[in-house]
Length: 476
Image (cartoon, rainbow, N blue to C red; front, side):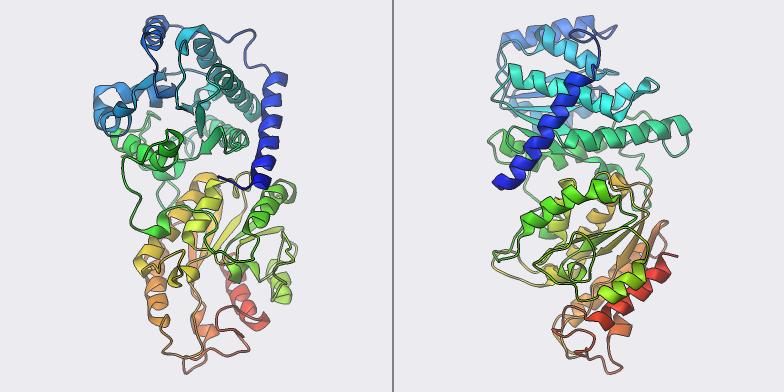
């Protein structure tokens, strides 16, 4: 549950988006029945009238396929015990789904949760704008809230397009899908309506889509559907008031979570400031990280942390619009939560700089120490989310900086191991550059001077200049 301030802000965004639905008609009247679906519709109306369902699934081909034989394992593992009703129709647009829902498919239903995946088929119509697609989804949400007021609604982003890179028209549709998803995310109030973007599961590190999970048909394979179901489960199960069907990953570095440390740092205020700033700033460069990144400089400014490297920041990014997504005490799992909650939405920057993982080596009562391999997996999940949310961005991954004054400080060895894993993983990946500036930060004897890092963790101006010079070179 979000704090009241965040929930209020998101509720306001939801109201604005719902207003958009009223101002931008999707179809006249109650929608439009999809040709050829009459028999399926009658069967679904009969199923609804036969009894209540705890979980209702609404959408296109991706949803309709779930109750077919090839997807039986997904259905049996995650859905069947929840008494689901599958209201998926291949090729259906938001107007078609709207017609179905207004003509009996929700009769007598008081589900605990409703999952909605739609919008991708709307862009088959040339000229359909993201605002029109989002308005269609918003109208469906209004109907769901009217007919099933106690249900929790989970909105899913339209799935990515496999042909987008090779076909100009498909690429244009993909851009509409992406923006529409960003608008749909604003419908979430984290009380009755929630949003989940699972598209990163289909991406490879190089930004291409995995055909074993999402082939050219645009419908996920059974393996792809299983990955989507696993990604949904930690979000869907609580909406149903249930424990997840599968346990969370044992690797805490890959399990998204909000603020962990109980300190005076106003994590939520920074999150709110970033969401507010992003649309106005239209950044060319995004910095993602922890307090090391936050302390450097850049918008949004914060009274909590005065910049420690303003001169090098200006030298590195002079004339560029930069947004700083660095947070005190953040770990990879915190960054994953932030990206899952819209911090990168609408920011299609030229460069995304990632420097995260330092705090994963620090154990506290709120989070255990992660191994280098676990942290590398967390960074990989961050990269995949950047690929999914900002396909055109190039990425610079910075190796974790050294800890402690002495060459034999306890964390030096695991940091070196992590940086080697990162170097090996990203050395040949198109669109990604890995830099490691630790040899320049350290003295010849391996010690770390106070001039570079006064507290042994955070750089001073001279340390930030070393990082900045390396970034400037990498982003040429």
